[in-house]
Amino acid sequence: LADIRTLRALYQAQVLIPADAAVLRHKSSGDLLDKVSLYQGDITKLEVDAIVNAANRSLLGGGGVDGAIHAAAGRGLLEECYSLNGCDTGDAKMTKGYNLPARHVIHAVGPIYSEPRAKQKSEQLASCYSRSLDIAAQHSLKSIAFPSISTGIYGYPIKDATHVAINEVRHFLDARSNDLDRVIFVVWSDDDKEVYRDLLPLYFPLD
Ligand code: AR6
Image (cartoon, rainbow, N blue to C red; front, side, top):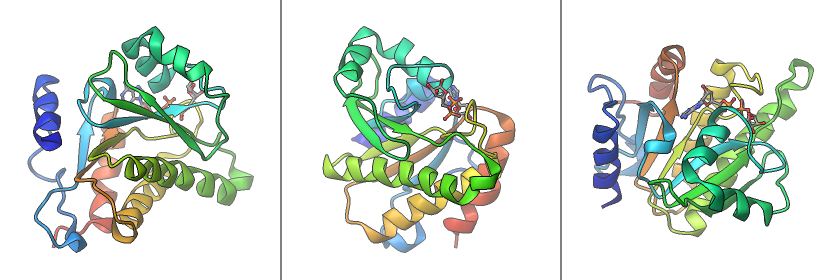
């Protein structure tokens, strides 16, 4: 059902997953589900169990995708966020989705990039993905959509961030039992889409 809802939302948004390369079979899963997708467009339109927010430590909103999510979700989201007492960098906390088509929002706090501390930053970024997936697994969620965390206002180089993001998802799907049958990487720009298209097959080989 989650799959059907997701696809319906994709068609409603009129941004289709390109048939040529974007839907990749999760090779080692042993089943026939297409678990990992690339989607270009507005994450706030996706009717999935959870969308991930690229939040800041206050969890009280901001610009970028955070601003878009709060604007679309409405005041209830901000009120629940006030009760969470912020969130550490590399960690994540879940709320309801309020006026969003998504049932939940997982607010992950990515690192602000700085080159001299690139290793620490990559660990914190990886942790955003793994913590979000942990929370999804704990709540038996079936579908989750990630924006490209830290690569906008927080300045993380898109190629490096995309390696971290895809590697972490691959690792999680291989290592942890979970109910997820769809993980969607959401990109906004054409350039970012090309990066994901290039790198996804390295972690999720088509065959
Ligand atoms: N749907 C999908 N992706 C989007 C959308 C959208 N509606 N809007 C932007 N993006 P950013 P960060 C992409 O800056 O770098 C906020 O103020 C965007 O093109 O939103 O983690 C927070 O409160 C980029 O590829 O997040 C924090 O203070 C990606 O989302 C800070 O920004 C992430 O860009 C977090 O910065």
